[in-house]
Length: 220
Image 1 (cartoon, rainbow, N blue to C red):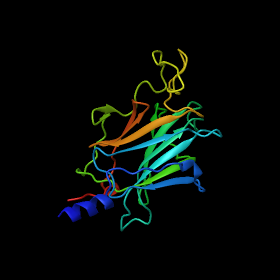
Image 2: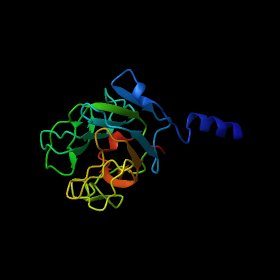
Image 3: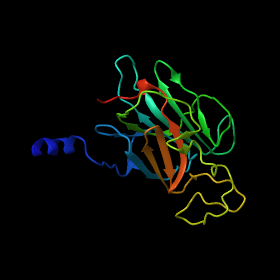
């Protein structure tokens, strides 16, 4: 019995890490997550948005489904520091993708009331099996009692102390955005019961509700 437990810990470790991702020879930094993610799991990324544009995106890619030619993207987290077709200001765009349905409706933070197609940028791919215990999605103003987009994003952040350890801090009256080109950020994606939550430098930024049953590998 103890041998079985040791084998399971080797196959499904409590934590994994990948260092020096900047040394990748490809455009994407891919991390395989053994045994997938469950409620309470988290993925922490420590990095600096690049000097060229600073735009980047993170994909949580689900288990391959027998009726789909491509793996579904459970969460596409797109940080557009240079804006997009809807705004010139920095914006975070969240979405999902499946071969059968294509891209879904984009959720912007701060909101721009748009449903534009997703833009390509430099990227990080996190291949995972997301284990869920429910099979319905209901649109809600909150996800696990957290707002979809924190009101501080795009608003004035007067009380934040400016320092090299808080790169998103700006002068009074300037809009707050959690990522800044050329500055280090610590971002954590956490799996909740109703959706996936992003925290940056200790602040809750966004929450994204699960959308479709066929994005999940449901365990017993």
